Every structure is written in C-alpha cells, then in structure tokens.
Length: 458
Image (tube, rainbow, N blue to C red):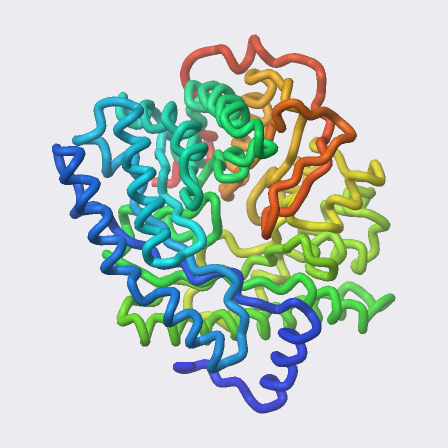
C-alpha cells in the first residue's frame, strides 16, 4: 500500500464495513488523453479513438476484478474518461451527425473493453463556444439516445470566466430534446447528461467525468464511497456533542479513504499507469442503508430538508474532506457528500414526505460536493424554466468558487406524484414540482454573466 499502512484491527474493521455497511470503491476510472487522435478526416479520427481506447483500457476490467478478489473490496464500476470531444472532433466533425458517429465509436470501444461507462462527450464553454462545440452540444440528445455507455457534460461557467448564458439557454432546449428522444425509457438520456460550473479535470464520477487537457496521457482515478459506514459509526455516538460527532465522521472518512488509496495504488502498479487522485465522496446508492439522507437523519434532522439540514450537510462535507485528506496521497475530483435524489432512498423518502423541495436542495448544494443531481421534474417543464434552474446552480458555483452541477430529468409524459424508473445505480425518482413562475425575460438575454470581483487574483 505504499507509504500508508493498515494494521490488523483496521483490516477487521474494513471487512465489517464491506460485509455489513455497504462499503465499496464506487469506481476505478481510467482517464485517457485523445489529443494525439485528432485528425481532419472523420474516418481517421474514429479509427484513432477506437484504437487508443482499446489499447489503453484493455486490462482495466481484468485488473479491477483481480484486486476485488485478492483484497475482498467490492469495486462497483470500471469506467473511462476521455479528453472533451468538443476539442478532439473540432477538425473532423462538420455536422451534428459527425459528432454522433464519434459517440457511437466511444460506445463501441467501451463495450469492447467491458467498462460500465465512458465520459467525455463534453464541451467546455464557460466563456464562449466555437461553432464546433455548439455542434457537439446540439448533437447530445441523438448521441445519448443512440448509445448505452456514453456520458455527456457541458461546463457553462466558472469563477474565472463567469456564466455563458447563451450556453445555459441552449442547454434548456437540449435537456428537453434528450427527454423526448428517450420518452419510452422515462427520459433516460437525461440521466447521462450534466451541466457544470467549475468542472474539475480529474473527476472519476459520472456523468461529469472527462480527462482534462492538463492531465497526463493516461491516469488512474478512484472514487470511494461509504454512506452506510458513516451512518453506522454515528449510531454509536447519538446525543454526543459536536466535537465527538465531527471526530467520528473524520475518523470514519479516513478509514474509508484508505481503502480507496489501496485500490488506486494497486491498480496503478498493475496497469503501469500513473495514479492520479482519490475522490473521497460519499456517493449513495438506492440500496437501503447506503444513504446520505440517513446520515443527516442520524445527525439529528427528522428528514433531509428539515430546518438544520444545510448546516448538518456542511458539517458532514467538511469532516469527510478533513478525514479523507489524511488517508490519501492526493485528493481530487469532487470529494465530499453527494445528494442525488433518485440514487438515495432516504432522499426519495424525504421528497415523498414533503420535507424536501428543489429550492431546499439548491440551498444544500451551496455546502456539498456537487449540485442538483438526478432530480425528476414534469415532462412539460418549459426549456426556459430548466435554463433558469441551471443558471441558479451555476451562480452558486461561480460565487462560491466550487464545482456545482445540474442533472435534471424532465420525464416525458409524467407529472408530479408519478415516478420514473431508471434502474441499477440510477434508481428511481418521484416527480418533483417546479416553481410555476417564469424567468423567460432573464434567460433569453444574450451574452454572459461576468465573473465576480473576487475572481481577480493575479
């Protein structure tokens, strides 16, 4: 395990966490640079992408399974991320259909090497967009509807550049179109599309993963998870003061992250690919007992969304980062607590109890890892309203110098009170009501919201 040792007591504790508390490594994500695949010929571009992905990732799944078997640590997903295709396809792709063809090549390559998902069908347009990047964005609904493993992201803002409101408004239309194209699958394409502010270059989690242009030719990034472990630890300190509460979260996060560091180091050594980062996020699943909302309940709020929830989440997020940072050689990605609705049974219960609204979730995103994640809304929600929700979340990220994101699913043909079923780790979600008042006059203004004054740090 390199310079981080685990004693026998910790081995027993870790086994208990795995067997009874849903501890797992959520993903090993191999990031691959496609910069050397650029070609003015679409055929040449597709061939190079296929060849490089298949060569770099040919052993990823096998090595992941070997580590699982040898160490007894579940590794839920093996994933890939690539350089944003909005950059890579700029010379060869002249039509939306050309970008869609690249997405299908990515999908085929991911299938050949056996990974769950491939991220990087992405555009970085926080200050403005080239004609080719706009083509990629407009191709997203068709690309996601016609592929199985491809994930897409669009970074529309940053603290340094402000918010590209033209791109935000466009994404309102794109999300609705993606919903319509997969109407027969509860608008599944929208679960594979995220809009971001301050997107990190080394995020191993989908749908926002891409391989940043500042990264090496290939790197191994690992995302750990353990909401059930944290909840079980907190059950043992019920009623104790905040100092003990914080120490318990911090100590538990440290143990969870050590498992991620072990997997990352082993995967890097066996694949001969440099280790990048450990993302120490608490990522829930639909499984009972694997919920961030349940942690918030254990801290003391009746339901996620009750008064005190934002403060409890801020405490949780900070202590997770402090504990994890002590256990990993390099921490990166998003790191903290995720609050997706469909992937967290406790969040679903909170929505159905009437405790949790989109507005309260937005407040919570100011102190957690990401943003409005896996939220199902009525299929007849206007594009302008979706763009307004995106703009609000991007503003939180821009002003607070943090990553924020929106993965919203307007479920075609369904309304408030109904459910959407996505399956697997994506779970299911109640359709949440959306504020009925309009923001058309705001989101239809052209241009960019400037960066905040505190962004000037030169």
